[in-house]
Image 1 (cartoon, rainbow, N blue to C red):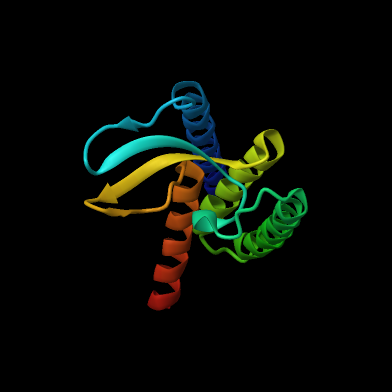
Image 2: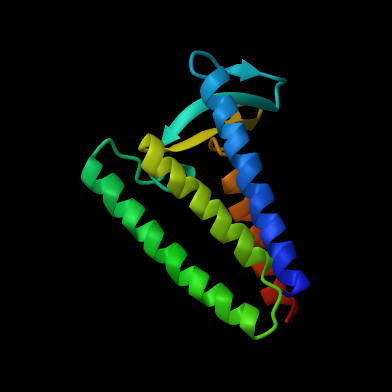
Length: 152
């Protein structure tokens, strides 16, 4: 088997394990309070039923299910794209980050009826939307794709 494939598997497994452990910790320790580390970083449990940064957040099960199905379809199509690039010899680290991040958040959607977000980064009165490790993997993957597209 190709060494690259083992590397991609290790990357995916690492992201998955770190995401699951941190989300379980968030469920355990953050269910009743926000924990402030400093003026820049705090932890607060939020269930996101929308997409990135809480867009389209809704308590409606129909909207939530529609968004979830669209995410499943996008993830499946992106898997096909990543596989094609892999078979053509391209490095697919970015694609692996995006796919595993999406899968981690899809697991939350099925198990908890919302994505577990808990990391809050802020500066003075400005706060970044609450996020998790899977979101970080997705953003890193997108950043790598953008960097690759600009250098080619």
